[in-house]
Every structure is written in structure tokens, then in C-alpha cells.
Image (cartoon, rainbow over all chains, first blue to last red):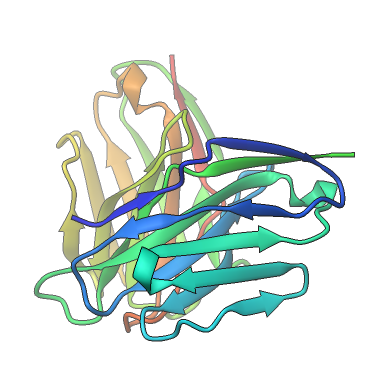
Length: 119
Length: 113
């Protein structure tokens, strides 16, 4: 079965520090998709990024960057120059295909990492 | 123009009652989901419908019954509520095709007393 592990339960840093959130996954699918979601204190789930298993290019979006390494089954997320508004729970998720339904998938989530940015 | 909406946002009820949560999406997506987030923030899939057909039914007590009257709506009915049902329930939708992310509703916080 698919599994996602976010070993860091909580991280606390001071504003402007860089911080990396780890994500390790297990899958038997040859094609799969990875996602990061943010859940701020207000509670909604905000999509940040998706990555398919064929694309190992790192991606940068402003202060956010993602490092996908298939060899170590990891998809880590780095926030550069963190800000208080980055405080949230961050979830890594892996798609799992649904047998018998082409294109259908469900998300398997990691346990989440609570990130606190202190002023 | 909310993409995925849920009602109610908060639901407080007593043990043994029956309650429903409604979800609507105006994105034209084919697939809808219910997820449960427990007190430790763990998110787990419960059900999924694709064009009104049930395609995922995880190990969920049969007191929980999803209903999809059309592909834009997915409701969740819960019978005989128990204390352990207290959680945040998220509805989500996704276009057809494995590449796409899921769009989540704002969540419904259910508290059973």
C-alpha cells in the first residue's frame, strides 16, 4: 500500500530562517503524483504544488522550492526567508490509483508537519 | 464564486442524532471525495464518487452514507452519531485524469457531545 511519512511533527524557527520539510513516500506504482498542501490556522487546505514521477526537476516558486528525488523516494519542501504567515500545517500527499477506474485516484496523506514561524 | 462549498461550517450535536453535511462544486469536475481529519490532523479518505458512481468506499462504519444526486453534489449522512465521529470533514473535487490536484472545500467541523 502507498505510504507517506513526514517525520517532523513540529518545527519552530525564527522569522527569516530557511526551513525544510521532509517527505518520504512508498509506492508500487510506476506512475504517480506527489502533492504539497498547506493548512493555515483558518483550517482550509491550500494546494501548493504537484509533481509527477517522470519529472525530477526541482521547482522554485518565490520563496518556496521543492526537491524531488526518486532514488530516495523523497519530495522535500523548503521555505527560504520564512515569514510569520508561513505558519501552518503542511501536508505531503501521494496519489494512489483506483483499480478499475482509469484516471481515478485518491490521496494518501502524510501526518503533517506543524510549522511555527516566530517573529 | 466559491469553487467547493460545504454546509454547515460548524455542526454541534448530541450522541445518537442523525446529521447531514452537504457539498457542492461549481468547477465541472467529475470526481468528488469525502475526507476525515481527526484531532491529530490526520487526513484520511472516506468515499469518492465519479459521475455519481461510488468508486471508493474505505473502511468506514456503515452509519456513514454518502449520496451523490448529480456530479456537482456529494452529501454525507451520518446516523447514530458517536463521540468518535467528532472531526473535521472535508469535501474535495477533481477533474478527470490522474494528473490533477484535488480542490478542497472549507471543511465542516463536527462536534458530538
